[in-house]
Length: 385
Image (tube, rainbow, N blue to C red; front, side, top):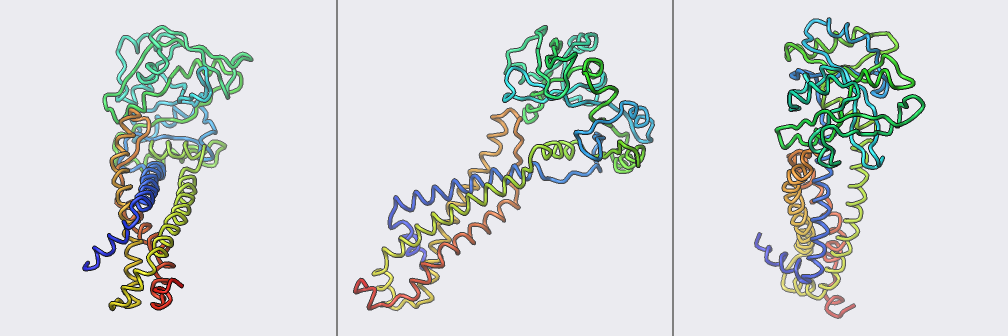
């Protein structure tokens, strides 16, 4: 600690260069904090114990559909309180790049999700209208939809009567009370019966079942009992928590963990080159000063540790600021997206990995110039050779 003033003075000898390098380190670790939160959100493990709502989907792939006749067997399974079902539709409105989830659902689907608040009159109108659809408030606001509007959707998987155009009548707009769950308002539901009768290829099939259990402490046993119903059949099932099902659905599109790791590897490799060049230049400019320090009694080992401490301090300072900004940014992003992107609070594990990376990067970029300082010949350095 007695050499802290020397380390600080050396670090900010060139304020502009150090400030720009610090900004790069801050940006790198801010990105690390955000992307690691995305990884945690998508890769968290979720069992079925302690949950009352589970998803029954195909064991082979969530793109494989299940027979609608399986519903009665699931309903009759001991421990099951309620069953609903849904099927992925995959249509788009106007622009395929502006995609939102859309499903065909069973008549009792909303009973499984009390967090979806729909006025009773609108629900009654929806249930009486075979072409009826309901959407979340956020999605309705985004597309300027109002009750009674006809919504044409273009199918990407299921054509109807030789055409890709499906038409729905907007009978209801639901909302969720919790601001953190506003992302669930970006969805459209319509009747599974309308889908089953209207599509050209698939009949009597559903995408998955939603199961509510009577006792959450027996959720695991109920899940095993449900999966045993179709064991050794051509439609074997896998029962899991809703969160695990959603993660599996996303992983069908991309391996989020691998993408995040690849991006961060590229970022930190670039950071190594940048900070390494900064430290090498900073030490090269101070060769005469380092020679003077040796002249007045600093040992080779002392200079080695001074340069390493300077390098590590710079990376740790910038990295800590970056992770602190990520702590603030995570809830801000969640709130700004109205819950559409749910980023968890920065985990302790992320901080530990981040600090370890800061120290490792600091040592790697600081070691070559530190070794040069340690081996410095006083006479040659003072003579400018």
